[in-house]
Figure 1 (cartoon, rainbow, N blue to C red):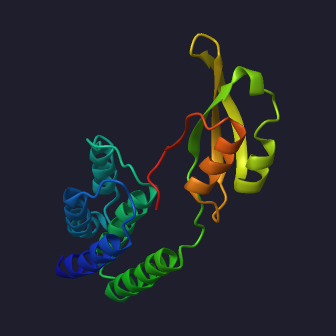
Figure 2 (tube, rainbow, N blue to C red):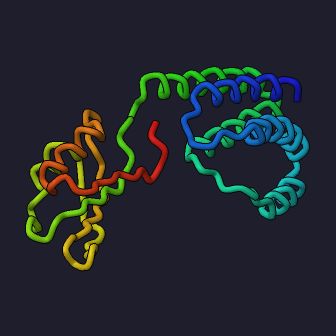
Length: 202
């Protein structure tokens, strides 16, 4: 239990350093620590006893998280803590230490190098006057500044004199929102343009 506690403290410290989500939770950090310690004991109890193991799995299947996990990386940290607790509970101390150090290093390097970084999906709303409306109005802008775009909705506004287009887009990593908005405003007679992020920007 002591080893599981020490290693889970290392895990949670790496989690705090690499956290990039929208809502940080101290309770989640405490959960990782407690689950590691508790699982280390559970694994010690069930080792070599199949009947007890199946009974505990039945109990665990009834447990539900009361709050949704908002970041996919949080699931990895939960599993990380569980694996360290399981390994320590089976007295594989050397393996538990190696797992903690190696996995923590991987998490930190992925965070530090921002491996796989890309822009989140955005919702772009563009108001276009009826006299300027045509299907290919923004194609050149999209080609220059986005990786992908798809038209989601078209509706009329201002008593039918304006048309509101709603797009789902993914900007290129080099694209700045202000620059994209300026290019669109040059095409839509400087009418309203808005960008909404579906997820928090990192």
